[in-house]
Image (cartoon, rainbow, N blue to C red; front, side):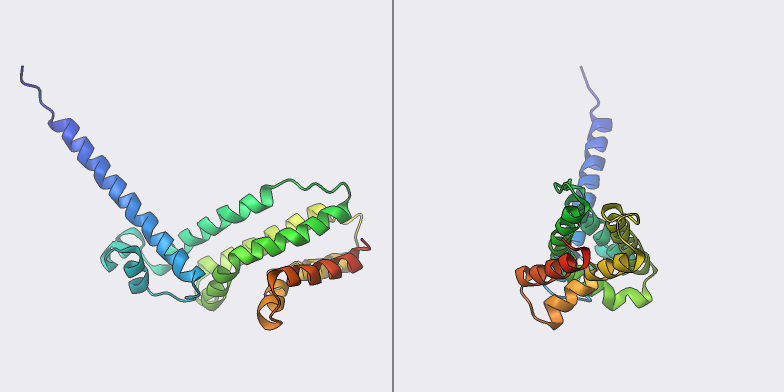
Length: 198
């Protein structure tokens, strides 16, 4: 009996092409992440292609421009950050939870530091990165407001806390004041304790 396997073969070929395409796309994003983590703040498409082991045309077949590639990188970073933010707080009081938040921010900012520096370099020319910045700032404020609601802390104290627990404050301590991560965390926690009376 003659069995025609051609439709199955065609389907297998399409699945194989799809898997290779997905693999190439993932390697391109991973290459951008690795380059940025290594301190390359504005990697070119050529550098990304070389690091991913693909041709330049492959990069632009998957991503119409560097902007769309940065969008994909941001999605990966946001997923990592959501993991940190999703952990439940253990503190019984709002002050204890704000202190936990201070420690978590340091942890999160260490993860996003290289990407944030790369973003800051390109943000003036990128609507995607501008939107990401606005969204991250709003999310951080909302988390702080949830743990330090307006009925327990006045507006000026909240704004001071928001400043202390910002990426900019962390970056200043780490890069301009040259503090190690543990030391920067202790400085911020001390300032937060004074501010909230913990």
